[in-house]
Amino acid sequence: MFAPQRVASLAAGETARFAAEHPVSAAHAGRLAAHWLNGVPMHWMRDWGTPFPLIVREAAGARLDDVDGRSYADFCLGDTGAMFGHSPPAIAQAVAAQAGRGFTAMLPGERAAEVGEGLARLFGLPCWQLTQTATDANRAALRWARAITRRPKTLVFRGCYHGTVDEVMLRPGGVGAAFDARQSAVAVEFDDLAGVEAALRSGDIAALLHEPVMTNTGMVLPQPGLHEALRELTRRHGSLLIVDETHTLSSGLGGYTRSHGLAPDFLVCGKAIAGGVPCAVYGFTAEVEARIQGVLAARHEEHGHTGMGTTLAANPLALAALAAALATLHTAATYEAMLAGAAGLEAKLQSLLDRRRLGWHVARVGARLEIGYGERPRNGTEAAALMQPTLEQAIHLYLLNRGCLLTPFHNMMLVSPATTAGDADRLVATLDACLGELA
Image (cartoon, rainbow, N blue to C red; front, side, top):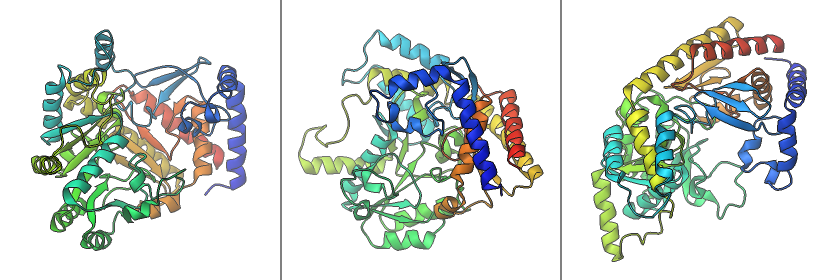
């Protein structure tokens, strides 16, 4: 598509430009290297392809400012955590009000009933639990699934990502794994219903855990009828269906589940659920709740002795943020603005790609978009084969140096309620210039 030497030359030039224009970030990076592994407090912060980390001074709405005084139209938004924008006013006010009233107590806060009612209305499931992260929520849902089905394994889609849950970490790169995840999980392709049925027919699958749209290996949209078939197959073979909405919450009010009429046994969501404050939820049907109670009764143990949960989960600070998010962010008006902005950006990006005759495509689920190379993939393996990480890094650096921040993984973009048409136009124009230089 583009000459490798041209891509390498562009990347080298953009790397040098970043280094020259970020002297304060460079000074911070020197100090960070003394005490943080790989020079950052969390290793994913080194995945941006920059010669040293970009150091953030503040972020608000859809803008991010660095310590060198540069401002960015932020389409990364904390890799979905700030999907509704950085520091939404209602969330900031709720957190500030709670800060003087206690951070954690391991007791239900006065907002707990309100939050439970709000989650039930939003997602259509009656029973809920709170965790700190979507990883924790997925882990808990899987443990309950194994407990109530008395089956040991989980079915996932090849190329998936559900946080750092060891028992489904089938992809390469997991450091220090306690065991081979092939003992606890089975993977099939996203479009392979025959493979799904064959795995379920074995009788040892407790649950199918999946994202309604695959997002870890680029964005892979489901084939027509897939979700209906997955629900029918899991019911027929006695396995539970867990829908991970962490990245597909952008689909619309109530996530992909409510927007497309899915009927999961469990629903998991983290990242943006509380407006960016660390919090995650998992909900389940009344039937699942009854089966959980049966497990607890059979154990003859007091409540809480399940080995699940953490001391800080459902703390008053998270509850305050979640209550405010349910009231002010998870609304029809918020999603109307996000979806309209994303649809507009999708059209502009696709028009650019068509004009450039690249043969690329734009995939969108709600407010989330990704540029993919070649024809739309049907599964994770096809999507992985289309990846061009060297090209992506060059493009991302070019955009970053000109004030447009994309997620460092793939070509993922989010449109928040604070994202403006001007932000979208700036992104498209800058990408056009980049593609022109590469050509």
